[in-house]
Length: 129
Image 1 (cartoon, helix red, strand yellow):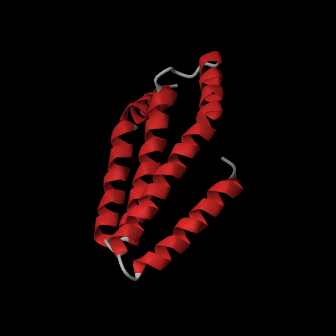
Image 2 (image 1 turned 60 degrees about the vertical axis):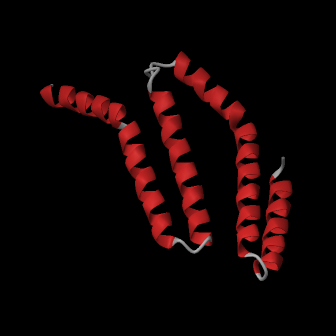
């Protein structure tokens, strides 16, 4: 899918949602969620070459093998958390949107703990010098 195709599809869903929002708000939200799922699926297809390139770079360099999965998990959590947060805001649930955002940030910190441990270990070695 191209950016133009995704943009046109998104605008069609927005217009369709605006038309049916008057009579049935739930269907408009459902259409938006379905469009988001399709776009995220398209993004995953587009990003596959980038991920393979990142894997090649990390394998050929002195990067530790466990850093890449941690970073990918953190990015995935951030994207999913932000998407769900915006959907909650669109549904009028701003408190729930805030809670989802807060939870996703805490999850990113939890997933990233091994990287922080390595960074602090390197800093400790530098201070000892």
